[in-house]
Length: 457
Image (cartoon, rainbow, N blue to C red):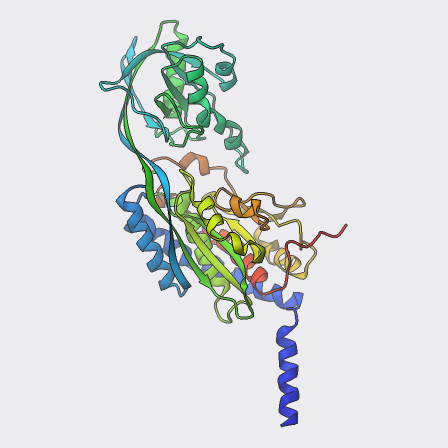
C-alpha cells in the first residue's frame, strides 16, 4: 500500500511538471505533419461556401450560417458549443447601376460602398471631377466639387503584407465624407484591388458616407481616366438603392476543447463567419474559419490539452460589432486568456509569425520555431501588437496576441468581390497555414508559457 502511494505521488509530480522542450517540439512536429495533409479545413470551407454561400449580416443566409457553425463544431467534437447573440447595424445592398452618359455612353461596373445612402429616385447624373490620387482630391478647397461626382482612381500597390491595402483604405473609408465637404454629390473610388478584373470590390465607409458612394472596377477607373484625358466633360449617371436595419440580430458562435489541467486558462482563436454579398466568402473569411477550426481540432487529437482552446466564429466583422460584443461578454476572463489570434487574410501560405512580447524565450516558443523551420516561415524579431478587428477588444483589455501572417500578394485580387469563391483556394497552401496554426495551438495549450511575462533583456 505504501509502495502504491509512492508510485501515485511520483506520477502526479511527473504530470504536474512542465513539458520538456523536446517533447513539445516532437508533438508540434507531429501535429504539423498531420495538418499538411489533413482535409478538415478544406471540408469546412467547402461546406460553408456550398451549403450557405454569401453571408451578409441582416439576411436569412446569416441565420443559416449560424446553424451551420453550431452543427460543424459539434460534428468535429467541440464542447460547450453555443451561440452568443448581439445586435449590429446591417447595410443591405439593392439594385445598382452606373453608366457614362456623355460624351461616349457606356456602362460602368460598380459596387456600392457599405453605409452609402441611396441615390434619389430616378438616379443621380452629374459631371465627374477625376483625381488620379486621393491627396489631389483632398487638396481641393470647400465648394470646389459643388454638384459633381468626385472620382479617385489611384491604384493600390501589391504587397505581401497587406501594407498596400493599409495605405489606400482611407480613400475608400473617408473619401465620401471628404468629397462631400468639398461639395460633391457622389463619390466613386477605384476598387482596393490589385486585379485587372472588371469585377469591383466592396467595402465599408468610416465614417458612414453622406453621399452615394461606390467602388469602380480597376478597368473602369482607367477608362474614365482616358475619357477625361480627351478634354471633354464626362457625365456619369448613378442609380443605387439600399436599406439599413438599425439593430440586426447577429451571433458569435463558440466551441471549445476543454483543458485537462487548467481549463480556465483559455486560448482564443477564430475567423469571421459573415461575408460580403457578391461572392461566396471563401477567402474572406471562410478560409479563416476553416483554418482555425481545423487547427484546433488537429492540435487536440489524442490526449486532451492542458489548457482550453476556444474557437470563435465572429458574426459581424465587415460591418463591425462582433469583436466588441465578444470582448464585453468575456471581460471578466481576460486575465485568464493565454493568447488570442485571428485568421482573416485568405487561404494562402503563412510567411511570417510574430509572437507576443512575453514568453519568447520559453521552451514552448523554441519548440514552435523548430516546428516551423521546414515550412519557410519567418519568426519576427519584433513582437505582435495587433491581431485583427475581432480580437482588438481583447488585446486592448490586456490579452496577449499572436499574429500569423499569410501571403497577401493575391488576396486583394479577390476579396470583397464576386471572385471570392472556393475555386480560388489552393488546398496545399491552406494546409500549410493550418499546420502553422495547429503547431502553435499545440505548444501554447500543452505548456506553461506565459505570454504576459516580461521579455529577457
